[in-house]
Structure formats: C-alpha cells, structure tokens
Image (cartoon, rainbow, N blue to C red; front, side, top):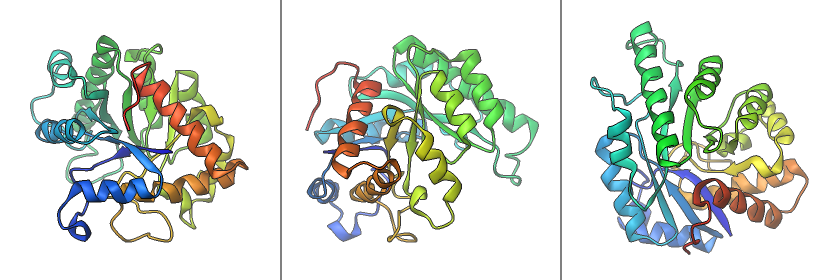
Length: 268
C-alpha cells in the first residue's frame, strides 16, 4: 500500500469522474494508493481540506498558508493553532519560503520579510501543537534552513516537500529531523541532478507524493495530475534506490506514519 504524502484534493480535475472525488480516490486505491495527505494553502481552503479528510477514510489534512498566498494580515501563532487544532489535521503547512518569482513584488524585501515572519509563526505553532511542518522551499535554501534552526522544533520535525534542491540541503534538513518528499519531477528527463540526490537520501527519510493537480510524472507529463500517479513516482524512486516497488511502498508508508501519525491508528 502506498501513501501520497502531498496532494491538493480540493483542486484536482474531477471531470473524468463525473465530479465525484470518491471515484478519483477509488481509482487511486485500485493502483495501490490507499492513503493521502490533503494540503491546505490558505485560510480559505482550510475548511475544505478538513471536510475532505473527515468524509473520506484514509485521507488526512494539513492547514497552513503557502508563502505565495500570504494575506496582508499575517497569521499569528495563536491563530494558526486555532486553525490546526482539529483531529483530522496531522500537519502544519504548507508553509515556507519562495524567492523564485522576480516580478509582481514577490522578490522585494518586504515580501521576503512577510514570508519569513509567516514561516516562523508556522514553525512555532507546530512546536506548540506537536504536529510536523510541511515546507515549500524554492530559491531560498539558506533562509529556509536558518529559520528551521531558529524557530523549528527538532523533536517535531517535518518534511521538505516536492524536493528539487541539493544533497547538501537535504542532508542539513535530515540532521534537523526532516524528511525529504519526492514528486513526479524525479521522472522528468531533465531531472538528472535530482535523481542523484534521491540516490543519496537514506531510505528511512524518504516520502513520495504527487503534488496533484500539478507536476504529473512521466509518461503523463503535461496532463492533470492526481493521486493514482503516485505509483509512477514510487516506481522511479524504487529503481533509483535499487529495491522493489513493494519495499519502497512499505518503507515510505512507514515513514509517513512515523512522521505524521505518531502512534495514531491507521485508517484505510
């Protein structure tokens, strides 16, 4: 059985399933993807992801504010704790830093400072609630690691999702009790450097994800992504690690449980 550790179920294209999310989840189950973590990106969709998790067995929720979705009034530690203190919520985020965009003001010092303040609040809320952090990081390696060191809680830890950075960053994050999650990007023809990083990440620190509806793996690149394609990601990672798909599925599922469930019963 396989876990999609990061997907946006409130955003996937349900047209092939007649608008029925349950049918999309059943299609994933048929391919061995039996559990999923539905990710929050702002206050507006927190209710939606929590409702999906309550309604569908095997689906968990996270809540948080994506660095490119920060509102003019930043969330506080208290407000994040209020938002995330629900039984179906197993993580805080996604949060983090994104310095990629150099237009529309995202690259300005003010925007960077707002992202950093927001990330810091998420890290401290995670420590208070004892729930791990889901981190989005892009073109912000040094600041991401520095903030995790400053405001993070190594006993709680978290995950760097959709990882595309260097082995040095992965190793530093692992040393601070973070996992590395690999998306469909690892299957892309131009992702040779990422594949080398994945070969170096210890198996017990790996997760797999789709980040659907984005980043569909080969051979579906360019199409809308969905949880059933976690299998393609897992097969690629298994090949890189020199193990069977079945072993990769077993280990990454156990990794997910250790990070996010922390002794809670597994729902299927």
